[in-house]
Image 1 (cartoon, protein in one colour):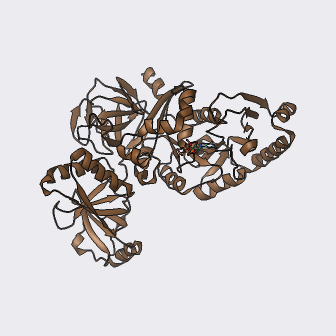
Image 2: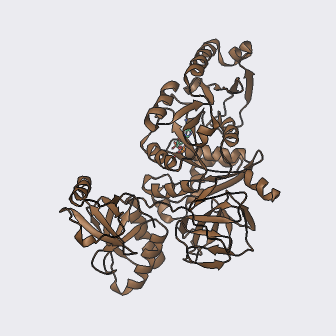
Image 3: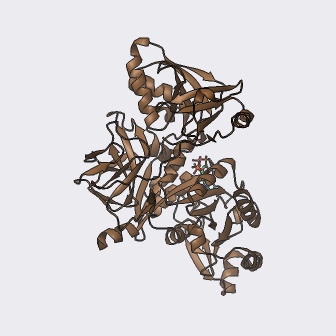
Length: 530
Ligand code: G4P
């Protein structure tokens, strides 16, 4: 047991989130560099190639030059076992990002120092907020001209509604970015030029009390500004409070430059110390202890076609408690079956390693013959753990979809159902007819392209998509309601999901309110469950 608890307690599983271009990929890569998972030479040609190597599983990604899928990066550093959940960069795949966040215990939010909080940061932050997980902020690109440091903090507090607590403080920015001040250790850390991270730089550390040393290192002018700012900061910023951080109420803030490596390793070290070990999760009213409980895990992502040669489907599971052993039988709760997980593997970038064992906090990929759905639980036989479902995000774009060749109906239905099971699309039917008409809903329009591409390439089915004007979908909360009795608006359309549950589509947001008004007692929900 002690071995299991030791293993679990050294795990740190987190996601890195950011608005595109804030530096998520670069920062991730630097973490890998410190963890020895890649070397400096690897990172030089780095970002562009890494981006492809890590997640170019689908042709469409190459064609569009965007990252559609996400991956898991795993490495050891300073006695910790780290799992980074990488998330797709493109906003049309934000749903995937949301799901990935469900598997993380904390999040690192990367912000561009010259931009502050951006649209996508706001969205992602909201989801982290829903889970109440700790959020750590890395303000990046200090090697460029940056916004005023106090204003950046203000922006985070006002825009995101979370208190900030700077753990370190930047000394200058742009060409005169010298390094950071560590508030806890009261030390100035300076860096030498790394030529954009292509060569190893030198780090020097001075106590702030060694004024001569500090002045020599950063100039008198910078020293004066720094001491003034520290004084201001000590008076004004929130006290560091680990409990508030862990409740997601306070975000520790770090400054640096992922590109030039300034402040990155210090950040990693503090972050690992401050963030949590694998969190307990709820099954019904019970909180399942990661260390004390036998094996359990849930599926947060299903990815088809990761390996073109094999046309396989991988279900990604987050282990929530105990130890996973490949030789043991587990129970797939939703399927009601006891089974052995097939080819359990650790998936890093495009390489895979078959695993014999893994622990709470780890992510494993298992071969899925088409039995798993997002949110499913597996656990020790004899148990009935059901982890809280992963919310389905409301699609905002809808299209009617038909196969071009009517003879291929079977492949078409199979393909579209499988893709829906992976959570990339949601499928619905006309309310009063059978499967003849399929309506597809997606969160981002690019998913339509992915659907078309995958049906053509994996199922050999050509489809025609006819866009529908609806933008708002509502699930009906009331259990016993006759959908035929709902008084609608002229822009409302009734549809049903594959479990025959009625849903409503609207063109205009205001119609939702109108329908609520016309049907007292009706409950319309923005999120559904699968
Ligand atoms: P993302 O994953 O959040 O989308 O961002 P990514 O790391 O891809 O970084 C976006 C751009 O910002 C890249 O430039 C990257 O080199 C640059 N960048 C990241 N961190 C820093 C930093 O600390 N300082 C500076 N100055 N730039 C940074 P690019 O021109 O798009 O790519 P590339 O040509 O450099 O490969």
